[in-house]
Image 1 (tube, one colour):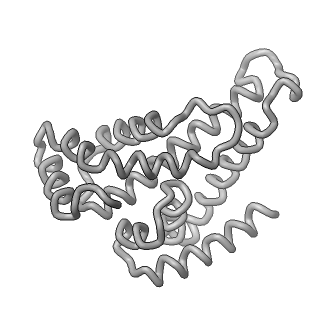
Image 2 (tube, one colour):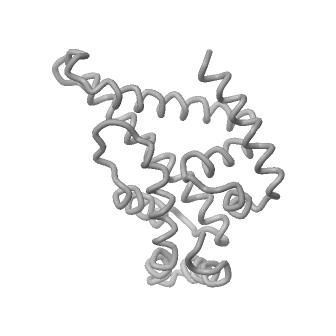
Image 3 (cartoon, one colour):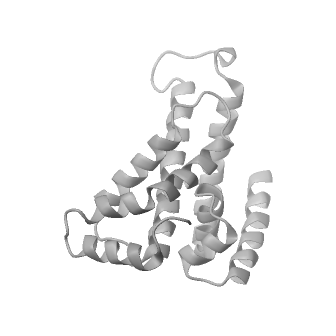
Length: 187
């Protein structure tokens, strides 16, 4: 993360928690470039026609965070929550696209009318979300590491900061989680 220092962001979060109406606005201004970079990283690998873009992902993330009760306690907590929200937004978008491509209650659509790459990407995203939910039941910390690394595109160092754990722990949890998820997704 390059923008706003930890102290500045923590202060803005405290203001937001205290009910300062400008708290969220000032916070987002301080971290907007970081959120755009995270969203861009995540969306860069998406295949097929895409209506969810970097700006849309950042704005949806902001709306969901601002609408939540309470405010994150510090900079790391904020980015961990942003990672979780980005995951939810991306998965919701993928599931919506799957429903549309499969008819979504409308007339049936022949498979050759569907962009196969986009459908596979949406199915992959939905399957990963299901597997990640199962992982969270098994090991919550590993699931949070995957959210930060995969869905928000955070580096190992950024993930360690966001989750307030050591770098070596992030590396170990990331490796274990990837192995477990691979096994779930290949079965």
